[in-house]
Length: 180
Image 1 (cartoon, rainbow, N blue to C red):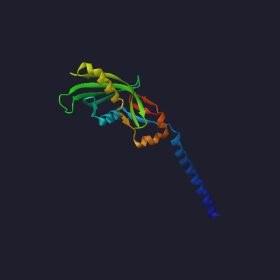
Image 2: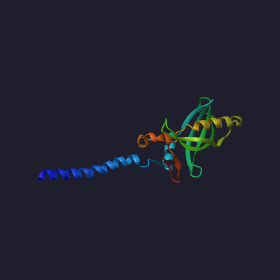
Image 3: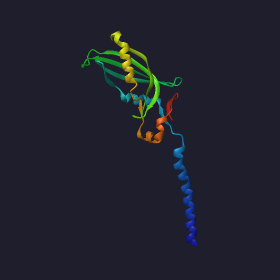
Image 4: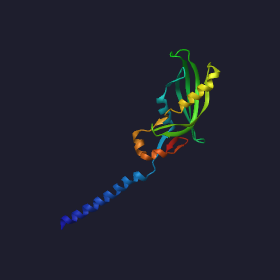
């Protein structure tokens, strides 16, 4: 009699342990999935990507000193950078200026990155640069700015979302950005 009583008691104990563990494991699939990125994290991540150097037409372009700001009201990100243009292959006699681009945050699934969507050129100044070339250079720089990955999700964040990453919603709050 004694052994059977112990066996039934052990089964009862295992059931009470197994049920909560099972529910805990299942809960991960049903809980809301979200990633929170503070504005400071975004700024630090963007700073790591700079300086960026690109060749556009016959110019070597260097973007540096990025500053990221957010607008909760318009749900847009603004990226301001110092800009230096050099002619030819030498980095002498450069033109200095400033570039500010704003856009909505979007998700690029091929790079697992947050990028600017519907980007617009807010400010573009280059001292001493030929004024006839400014609009062309502005459009070319805007195209390049759309390609900058502002934040790249890490493997843990990608696993957390799984297939749901194809339809994420990005919302800007006063102190953070939430990806759902």
